[in-house]
Image (cartoon, rainbow, N blue to C red; front, side, top):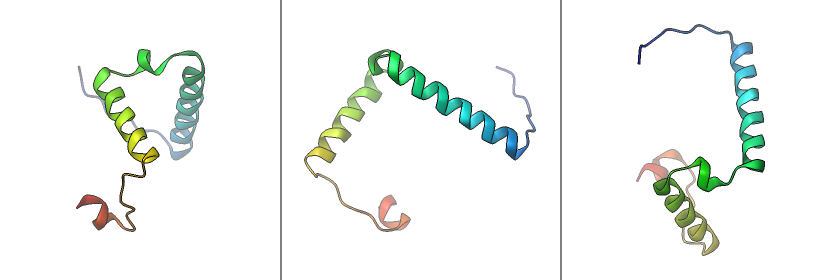
Length: 68
């Protein structure tokens, strides 16, 4: 794939992000996560959901705590 340089304004970037969110919300309603994501991602998502449900996590209060 060829690399390109793209210059867009902050306003255009905000519009792109808005369009992305609209598409994401639409796809979540009509397409199963199993069709959108690969098996490895889904496995990690299920583990994370189980950890949150079981309160198996440590709250971090700053970025230094997060990366340790």
